[in-house]
Amino acid sequence: MNLIKVSFYNGISVIIKMLTMLGLNKVLAIYVGPSGYAIIGQYQSFIQTLATFSAGSIANGITKYTAQNANEDQELIRVWKTAGTVSIISSLFISVMILFLFKNINARFFNNTIDNNLSYWLAVSFLFMMLNSYFMAILNGMKAIKPYVLLNISSSVLVLIVTGLFAFSMGLKGALIALTINQSLNFIITFSYFVRQKWFQVSFLVGRLDKVIIKGLSRFFFMALFSSLAVPLTQMFLRNFIGSNVSWEVSGYWEAINRISAINIMLATTTLTLYYLPKLSEINEKAKYKYELINISKLLIPVTAIGCFGVFYFKFYIINILFTPSFINMSPLFGWQMLGDFFKVFSWIFSFALLTKEKWKIFIACEILSAIVLTVSTSTIVYFMSWHYLSLAYAATYLIYLIFTSIFFYYFIYKKAI
Image (cartoon, rainbow, N blue to C red; front, side):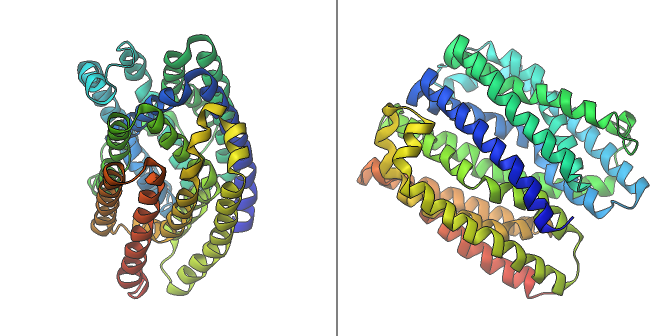
């Protein structure tokens, strides 16, 4: 399937996901407020970190090896059985750790602001979260675009309905429970699709571990591991840092602007994941590689630039639509944040190429660098400048990330034989 068709189907998914996120943001803004936003952001980063130590860390690897072996049935089965077994074992291990360590984590990262009983919900749901990630990675690798898009749409709608109902009835506690169980509910839908497919059998979920595949997936594990340490753990630290040194309300503003960024660059994120990642995994010819690189750049760079300008220009309308009047003070964060979004999408074109060619040492170095720059620059702004400039740290981080990823891409991938 070519880029135009992928972009069309992906565009439909993104529009629906954006609309559901708009509704979800409004519900959360009404029922949890700015400080509750900060806590929800912390909790989602915590789940993202846990996912990295389980199947979430190898999802890109599953996509890559599925795309590479799409015409080799026996090799596909070995990939799926190995990845499925790893997913189940690692997920069960993480679930046990959640039950034993959640109280300490709650005290350290959440200041005991959430109910410890949430650990039971999370421990039970975690396996299904990771299996859902496993199935979606297979679909992406198989280039099953239509079912992938439809499942994403159903996921978006389900998240809105469940989180909205729980937040309305129980406030922050309900929102956290909903965010915990949503992916488990999505698993039911995804699994019901897979069991009806002739090319997949439930027996492919578990089997003998293949050493070669394990070695390949381990590279993606290490890349995702350091990415998880660089992104969600950094965000958890900075939310807590801003909350403790400025206020939790400002930390909520910082979380809100990051959510706006996630919506703003959603088309780029999903296009890179859905088309660019499996496509580059197949290509070994320099001419084709160059063609795909230019093709994706022509689409993403102008679209992202227009989107960033639009978000900045209509920022006050966006705040009123997405949130409540209590968030109006976050408006100074928009300018630098939108510039950072542009740099981020541009840099991802190169970092995804590093990912597909398994340049894991370079990828990890870039992730660590970005985490250090973001942490140091944010801390400096908090201590020596106004919090209104917090987004300047984000823009500076992704400008530096863009410079390094583009240089590494040119010298270690493009200049050499693909």
